[in-house]
Length: 100
Image (cartoon, rainbow, N blue to C red; front, side):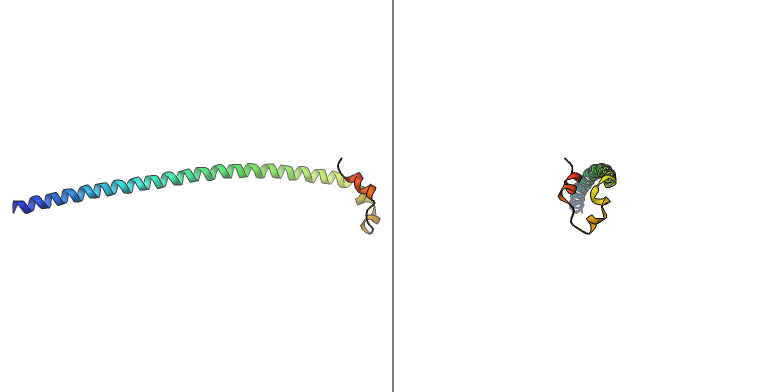
């Protein structure tokens, strides 16, 4: 029957069109997801770089402060007097160690 054949053709065309649109939507969604993941990756890379830079600065500061402490320990009267470990330190000895 020609009418049935034409109807089936129309159904096939509509189904193909519907499938084409669905595939387009799916590809667009995948692309958007990939773009979002790429943006997130870039952001995390920037944050990682920033944190590494901060670690470097803090490590340098820690080294500097350790050196300052080591130098101070050499001249600190509180550390040289054995009596200071047993009794309370003299206030004048303590203030001589403090930064001015």
